[in-house]
Image 1 (cartoon, helix red, strand yellow):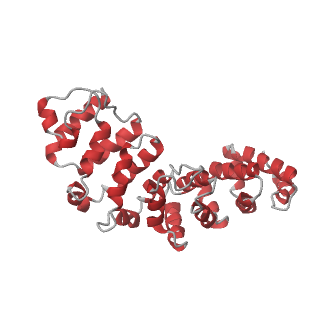
Image 2 (image 1 turned 180 degrees about the vertical axis):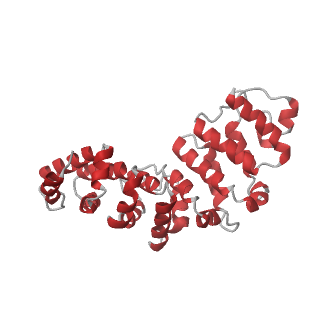
Image 3 (image 1 turned 30 degrees about the vertical axis):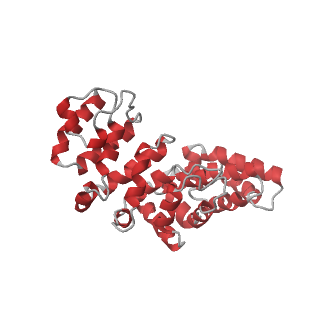
Length: 297
C-alpha cells in the first residue's frame, strides 16, 4: 500500500524525462495500487498522481502508456474518483482528442474510461459538456461509431455503452430523436451486430432510454423509423409459433427459419423487452408477452 513517504518518493519518477526503466517500474507499481479499492481511494486525494498518469499516456514506451491507461481504467471504475479525474486531473479533453485519431492504438481503453466516467449523471454531464466544448459533439461520436473500421487498430465497441450512458441526459435524447438527423435509423442495425455483445447492448440501452420520451413513439413506430422489427427480431428464437402468433408479428418476423438464434446475452434481452413494453402498440403486446414467456421458460 502506498503511504505518504512512498508517495513523495515515487511521484518524481512519473515524468516523461525519467529514465525509461525506472519510469516503467513506477507505472507498474501504480497499476498495482489501482488494482485495489483502498489504493484507488488513496489516490483520490493525490491529483498530482492522476495528472502524471495522464501525462505519461504520451510516453514513447508502449508498455508505460498501457500501464497508465489500465490504471486510469481502474480509477474510473470507482465512482468516488470521477470528480477528481474530470475536475482536478482534467482527463476528458485529452481522451477525446486521442479518440479522434483513427490510428491511435489505445482508443478502446479510452472508450472504457469514458464509459466509466459517464455512468452517473453528475459526471455524465461533465463528459457531455467537454464533448461540446471540444467542438467534437455527439454527431462526431455517432459518425465514428457507425463507420466500420474508423480506427484500424481498435474496435471502439465501448462507444455503444458511452452513447447509452449519455442518453441519461435530455440533450442527448433530443439529438438522437431529431427527425432530420436520422441517428436512430443508423443505430437500429446494431441491435443484431454479431461481432460484439458490448456494441449491441450499448445500442439497445440507447434505444431503451430514448423510448422513455413518449412523445416520439408514433414517429419511432412509423415507416420513417420502423423500430419494432429491430427490437423483436433479436428476441425471436427457433421455436414454432402458432398461426395466430405469427400473424400478430410484423411481416419481417413471420415464419423465421429453424436456425434462427435468439439474443444470447440476458441483459440485452431484458433491455429489449423493456424497450418493447415502452413503445409497443396494443396489438403487439400479446405477442411480446408470448416471446417474454419463451425467454423466461
